[in-house]
Length: 63
Image (cartoon, rainbow, N blue to C red; front, side, top):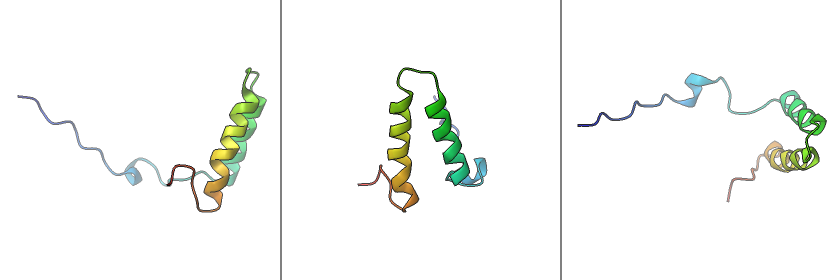
């Protein structure tokens, strides 16, 4: 007989908030652009496209 998987606690148990502050977003975007990788500009652009709608209350994952 198998045991059920452990239950997961709510997110508020693991972290105090479910969003990034503007300064955290800025530092993530700066880090994506400063990378010496081949596609750093692509990563930056995707990050901006993903974050921008969320600042207006929308979201790229919502239908």
